[in-house]
Structures are given as C-alpha cells and as structure tokens.
Image 1: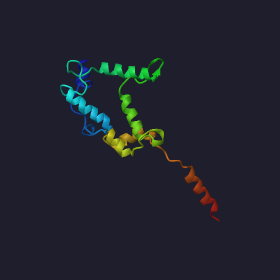
Image 2: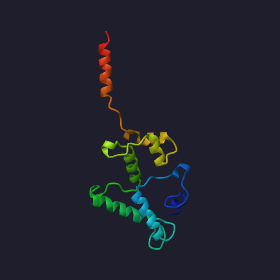
Image 3: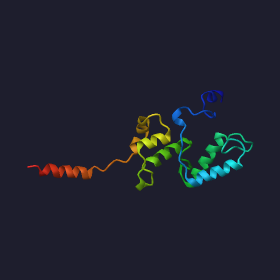
Image 4: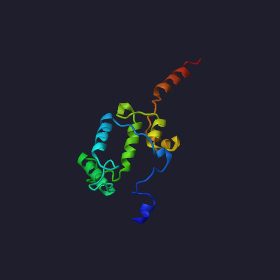
Length: 151
C-alpha cells in the first residue's frame, strides 16, 4: 500500500494540473442540496465516513457496483463497469451526444474545459469518435445535380 500512496492514488491533495481545477455546472437543486448539507455536515469533507474521515474507496466502489446491479447494468451478473472512471466517460459522452439523442451537444472546446484536458487535441483524440457527424447525402446530391447540369 505504501507504493500506491507514494504515487498519489487514494491520497487527497492538490489537483494534478492547473486544468484540473475547474467549475463544474450543477443543477440548482443539486447545488442547493449541497449548500444545505454543508451547513449540517461537520468538517471539510462533503461526504465523510462516520468519524469524519474520508470514505474508503472500497466503500464507494461497492456502492457504485451495487447501484449498477440494481439498475440491471450487468455483464454475467456482475456490475458492467467496475471502476468509477466509467462515470467520467459517461459524462463526456453525455456532453458530446446530440440533443436528439438525449445529450447536451456541446462544442469540443466546452467539453475540453469541462473535462479539464490540457489541450483540445487530448479531447479530440479520446472522444472525437462521439461527436456527431454531418449527413453528407444532401451535400453530395446537390454536387451531383450541379455536376450533371454542366453542359
């Protein structure tokens, strides 16, 4: 466990880069609930364990996996996504997907900022395949008509 702690996994501290510190938009009802909880909750942690210390990662992951199983998000009876990093990918996908498909359809620069990527290239490399592609059929049909109309 010592080696893991030395590399920062499971250790609370400063964000790893300037881009990691950012504002994340919240629904007003979520922001209000967090404000109320902050007044009622002792200490500086948002969700402390019983004695005020951080909740163990094991506890959080177990709850995440139980929620998936309860929702039927399973593979062979087990939670489909074992780790919490899947939530980050879900959020990125939701930001990118078309509004018609239930997403936010945000521009790539906005997605970059929300994810805290140092460069837009990082966002494009990781999530570029999710950005909606335009339907070329109308454009190609118009080009074909123009080409065929030339004497």
